[in-house]
Image 1: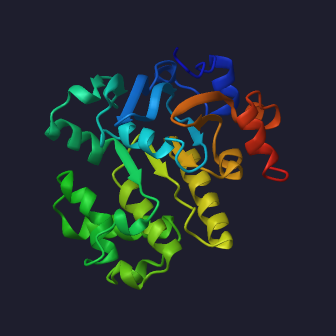
Image 2 (image 1 turned 90 degrees about the vertical axis):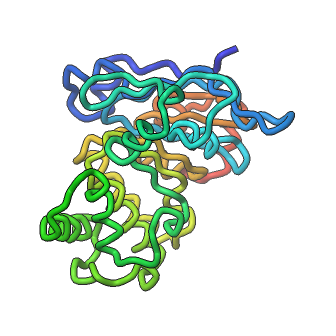
Length: 280
């Protein structure tokens, strides 16, 4: 049996996402029947997912629910045992992600996709400067004018609330929250259309979390960035996402508009999650 979220109607999308354009009537990302096994255990099982341009989707569940495995599959980092994944690029061409060769997939990764790790050190090069980290993606896409690369790197550091004068400092001298914002700048400078965020605030202090979440909310809205965010924190889903999916033991058990799921959960597991967080 497929546990698919029902794609939102055009009316629902217009009510929960930025102003629609013609291209918004075609999904950006479509996954069908994604299944990953580790021996006899299913990390995710028969998962269907549709993401629309400019939409933010939260995937929630406790540790071991399969949500990070799902995100890695959607990023093309992990091949499933079963299932299909299609992505539509900015030119309107649809790609079968698992049929792409390594070069074609890497091209999408550096031009169309952004992947933000839970631990920013996994997404940064700690031995080079902050500016080199941010500008590297531009160079990977063919930029060669050093002055322009540096100027854009400064601009993006300021955009994520980092002081541009620290451009020549190594990330190792930054706090955890600053490293996470630097990782976000590194990923977004090339203008991706899809962002995949793996628990981006979970390792941070509460006050730093709030500041970063506010930044992410502003960036996803201003850039019309289609986003999938994995989190165990329902308040993060409430703040950022128009739709959400709930996973348990690798299975998608409930999905819908975020407010509907959180205010009127139908599955007993979702009810337990909501009840465990006061005033979510």
